[in-house]
Image (cartoon, rainbow, N blue to C red; front, top):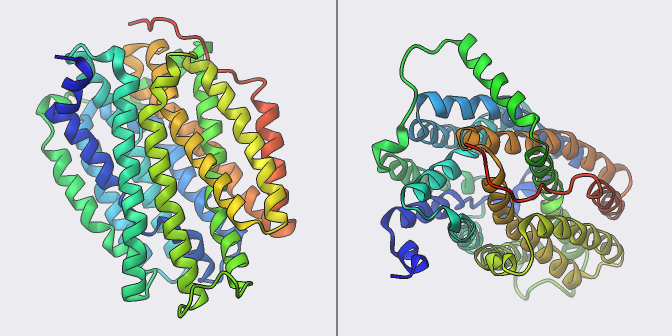
Length: 419
């Protein structure tokens, strides 16, 4: 049987895909900044909330990888979904800034415990099946299901919103798919909860973390690839939801774009849900099919090219936001999302070939930690620039930043990983 057909029919691969699908049913996502703006928060304070989430992620990212190595990946993933659920409850009931801060801390903890761990489970399973050479294909496939979940979530969210009229309720509705994912994780084979036996003290925990970090930092190819990926993702995370206030300003400031018999707010909700839904569908297509490009261009080279393309798109966004060209802005945002989700499988393919097997979880956690650090710095900075200058100025600054930094952080060559 053809290996790719076998992968598509494999029961555990289907579970991996389902995990990503339910995890991405975040109904609040197309409206998060709008929701926070409705609570009289400036873009700067919204940036601080994002920063709190990412600082939490940063602090616990590497320890979470060591935690998985010593207490089991299944245990860690189950814990992360409990943290997510509590954070959703706080977003639902929270009206004060400090409650939102606590919610962001718990969400950040969930992200720290999740990131890298599920990828490591997938890679371990591919090694068991002797499918590791197709890791880019498999990861692109599982990620495409995650993005399909995001797309469906966007379309469903506007139905909930128009039916119940409450952005706050969307957080509560997210609990249902996260409970499903919690149960799904518990159904994974026991061998995925493999961990080191014996007593493990905080001193041992800190020592193991430092040893892994020092070892990885000496591998230049790994570090360049990790920094390139984390920087790219941090930039996209920092600017990706600015389409919400952009469209809010354009739609609510124009009588032409208001849909007949609907208020400006309802029209905005429909636009945002449709945009995010299509964004994620296009991203799913890109994630699933990027492996075809890898046949022509090596993954590290593709990662470098896509960073430059992102910079050009941001500079174009600055121009078209200035003239309120709504449909061009939407198309350019489509490209930003496609680049983000096409680039991720390239990173997994590149890093899988050059990192040491025993450092797999920790290396992926370091990449997520770097991303968290960059977002923690960028989010309030981007918000400050947008508040004091303009969103157009923000895109110019970030576009130039990407062009300059990409000259110094070319991903490493694909060489055989050392065990």
